[in-house]
Length: 282
Image 1: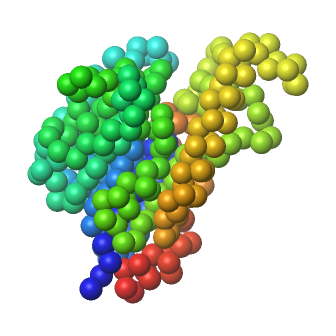
Image 2: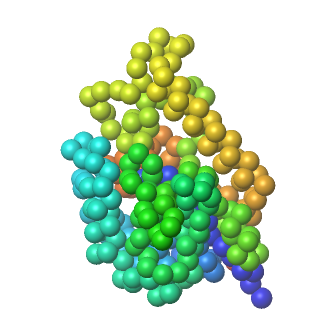
């Protein structure tokens, strides 16, 4: 009997397009997936796949986001306008409306920003759950769900391998597209890091090469905290196969080039193909 395999698709904005490349290889190799856990972009790709869309069809539909209000200089500070655009896109392109109608079980990860707790959603309307899971603070507003105020699951951790084991996975495949902590250029402009855009202004403040500005210091501190939590949780709940596509130099909202992250996903899946085949009994 084949082991129960859980696929964990991490958050990382446009870097999450690499998930599509990984899925292309999994389908080609007929490696079974029993359920998917997705965070942020991982939840969106996971939903499209679980709804029955092929990777090629996903690419076709996602291309319509290029140049949209989801990320553009004209709407850089209009979080609600971007979220409405994403909501309309999801409504138009998802062939099903609820978790119960999906062909493959899906759990999406969010965070209750009031209680500071991880919240998982695996039932009910699909689009509100995806909007919550992808509600990156500062880029999209949180989503209300009953008494909860939900935001991107990556606020706590972008790769929830622990949930895969909790849900009964005997083998876990995890695709990590979270950017590693910078060691060479410590004082990255947060807007550049998120958008990948060549902006006509900076949030860094004055930097003399050694002493950062206030915003640069705060951004670096948040990155250190997030990276520490990310690596600690991953070590505590290590997957059987960990894929890290080479997308670390991409901005989270840089949707100019689809092919590069998708190909990075293919390349990484090819690199670990013997381990993937072993999971599927091949």
